[in-house]
View (cartoon, rainbow, N blue to C red):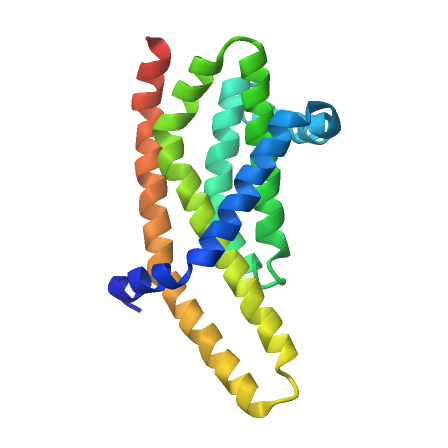
Length: 203
């Protein structure tokens, strides 16, 4: 499937992009406004990741090293999330909301500490590319889930099953150039994260 066909399909994905965006930033809003309610959940996630990163670095990871690790890890996972959407979109929705919660919680913690500008400089350079990559993968994961649900509901009609099967095949073909797009976005984001972001933080 060609890149022009993918671009055309992007226009047809408008509602799924909106759903993914609402899930992510809705989670961010909840993370920012409900520290007491979600602090335990986020703290557990951070604790687990600190253990993983500590085992990799041989030292306790700094909060920002941890945060960058989370973002990079999530973007690579977003490629897998797109296909795990086959389970009726539950996995990409959980992925988007939970990562939004984490982003909102970290924003609150830094804002409370008077480090909002530091937070913005650490996130925006690569986040403006990295977060859309996550949202695109999540949107396609949600779309895949709806296709599978449509397939499950069409079992009584052979004609309907054939139509849904064709939709799924077309969708899977579109994910091939989509993977290239996401990989390219992640590559650019990684360059920015390792060049522009450290420079901004040093100012």
